[in-house]
Image (cartoon, rainbow, N blue to C red):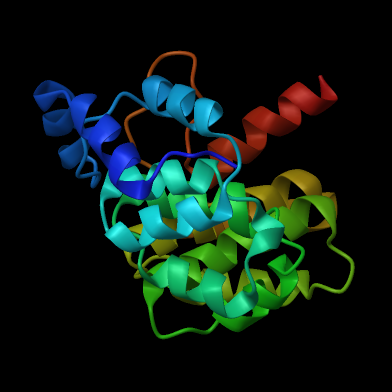
Length: 222
């Protein structure tokens, strides 16, 4: 466990602030200016430290929350604490890191997925759909995959951006990993046209589900 205090860690993060980086990050919903490689270096120096992670999270500082997620073991928090953390994320990056580094790796992941799936908060539902995608890919037994497609077909087009992105990821992975559902998944994507015009750099895969499915299937089966 580190001897660094939360105040010390926040001071180190403040010293790493780059105004130009903050300007770029803020355009993407992240109110901090810390280079993520430097933040990871600091996290590695600190090591795993749950008490410090909780203090940093409670500070409300975006860079502090990102650091907290890197020094916290997923198994060290119960379901209520993880629920509270999700609801208090302060940035797009913190939401993404929380889902991928903590929620997906928690032994309580399935409990959380069910708890969040029909929540009133669209960002909380987005986390549930991210966990659902993980199950679609790794542990689909017990999931009603046709029902997931029904939900996606009914809700995807009008969903809030973060929720829409997460549901779209589930749609694509249903088509990629479950051949019997591929035709329907592609048809839903074609009809809804969600992310069809999303700008994609050369060499990158489009998030538009029909193109995404076709490209990954081509790679897997080619």
